[in-house]
Image (cartoon, rainbow, N blue to C red; front, top):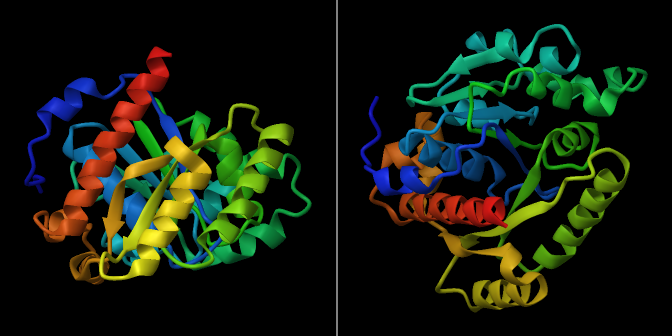
Amino acid sequence: MNLPVDNTALADILPTRKARVLAIANQKGGVGKTTTAINLATALAAIQKRALIIDLDPQGNASTGLGLGQEVRAINTYHVLMGEASLQDAIQPTDIPGLDIVSSGMDLSAAEIEMIDVERREYALRDAVRAATDDYDYVLIDCPPALGLLTVNALVAADAVLVPLQCEFFALEGISHLTKTVERIKGRFNPGLHIQGIVLTMYDKRNNLSDQVANDVREYFGDTVYKTVIPRNVRVSEAPSHGRPVLIYDINCAGAQAYLHLASELIHQERQMAAS
């Protein structure tokens, strides 16, 4: 399947360094983590960069959203974390050229309990990722909506964290917990970890609260907040039920265009970081 978009100009400015690992994280559910992971990865694939999604959420929504049924998830992130399979063994292609996935399975929900007595349990994903990232430009880890051991593994494995933040009243309160967790992980396990950026999601221009939240978040976090805002969009909501990213389902809709703009902004950000 060819993506109906030509972003050659974006490809020219994308950094060439390999395997930039980004954890897509927020301890709150329903803020757009999986939607962001799927569509940002699709946008990167559209500009001919190889991307890998690691579905680390036991709900497996990223896997479902990319059309993978339960019957093809026999080897998944659970087996990788438990050391029963390598990341290479668990990688599967998607229908989108340049985009692969390590799926999630229902057994992943037991991983946190089973890993309690495992030595170096916080490094399980990092060790697996390091052995398999030469084939990719970007690895996006879709985290569960909790700050447990699965998310800790993602943060230890990641170069940086991308935070989807819903435009709702308790947004700032929720992200404060995540930033504290990032600082603790940075101090104990991953000194280079930082927040890459915050992306405002589910923005409703008809709702004054969305504007208020967006302004408050920008005032508090400054340039860490991406200029691109992901709007509430029915096509974005419909796409997962068809096992398609919204960029495939309806590339012309406002949500799809927003994710393309987000990819562009991420690329420019990374280019500036590499030059500094």
